[in-house]
Image (cartoon, rainbow, N blue to C red; front, side, top):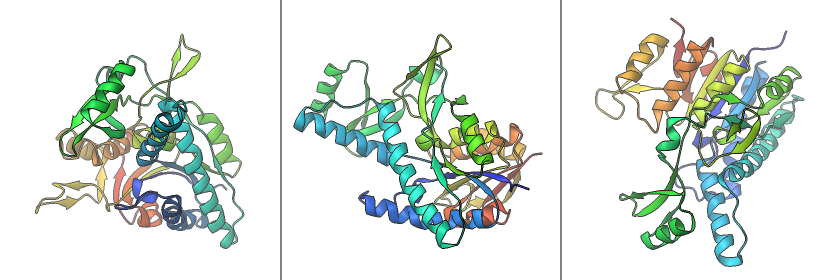
Length: 319
């Protein structure tokens, strides 16, 4: 009998630690450590699909493109292509590190990366209100020059960090385009890396013509869509804290242990979770359970085995 299917959404600390420069060596060392935790799941018999973020990586890729244009007049690529680039190299790191760890343990499992597209609604309200910062910081003069070259770009000032950044829409994920291929690979015994960075956002013009769009999809919400569509048993969202908290950062803070989905939904609607941090993770957990998932978990990455087995993190159950 095949083991239960787990979708594990890796947080940013699985790839890049606070204060690091982002060299390949730093990122690969982090992935190696994460792979040891993931290998524990495989060794225990679980089937595994891995998703991950790409915020710093896609920002660095856009900086390289920007530098290439300024120094060598090399044309930059659009954001959806930059997303595909980062899916490829992050997937490579995970394949390399996890396959190595599994072979070291005598486990003959292969890891496959699927360049994943996510269909969004071209009428999503997010397209009328870009909010997600991407790419480098610009001075006002640089921003105005960019705006003259690309009138469609939207910029917002980050006064705290002193500069202007481009902002793009963050539409809700609707369909994982490669869902059937991912499920087929899982059923064939592969470990699959998918939905990197929330997936490459596309719209389908006239219901059939796929077009990449300048947007960023939240990776936790995309992970829920994937987990639901491939009928995963569990969704595990890993981060740098040991669960979801009420009153986080206050003397009254309290970690949620075991919680029913209706209770968690009430806390979410009351605004207990940060919009740009824990909020999307909690919303993804709620959606997964409401869409028929057995259990969703929010936990720290080193706790992943205990989290899957119900012994760590915030455990979200159906009512």
